[in-house]
Length: 274
Ligand code: 13P
Image (cartoon, rainbow, N blue to C red; front, top):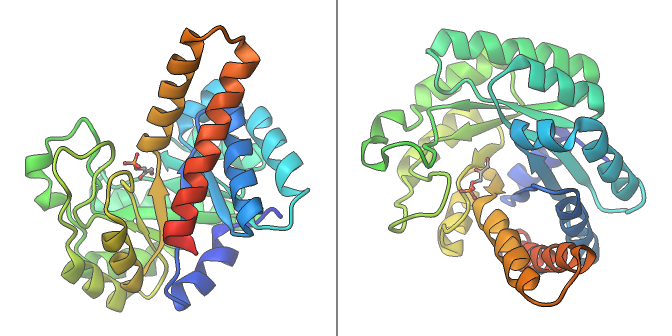
């Protein structure tokens, strides 16, 4: 079933549950994620970055998504992750994505509000959902020692939500994208204060490598969407490498990648979402 974040996240948020977001990098990854959700009877969010959108093409991604989501009874969102350019948002909306994230977190506050508001207006007209970000979740390229200045300020989060009317809000509470060199220390106190102020579903980025107990605590404090990417890309890449050393053809290599990804997605769904 095709669905948006604005239909799926509010009930999860009220019930202190979270829906998992999985970053895909191939068309076969989409099948792996959707089949995993279907087999466990759990909703899933299939997500890709603009780089993946522009490499695989919106029509191909949406074609595979629709052919699977329309066929199965479990809810599946197709979400464009971390977008900074409006042209990628328009491309995703016109291709048939059901959700987009506009990431103005590196911009000055007013510019972030303006950009996000523009996307919300168009997305509303198209009937799809929008995730925004305030504070900035560091990426692999950032100096992780110096990210405390980018943590989300609860008052700023409150006014951002009021001014933009986003459906979900990504917050920076100590997680980072990519593999962690040391276990991250999530700022639960800050998360609790943000949650009290904004009262809308919150999103935890940088899910790879965060202990399940910490993810669960974050869910109890308002996180209703947990994003997982790096570990899945690493798993599929490693599987391709491993299997291509054997006497396998391209079909077998691609199929092995999909099966491993599906198994791992199922494990994560059972550990966190169920
Ligand atoms: P990881 O790649 O660290 O799992 O984070 C994924 C993410 O937050 C995508 O938005």
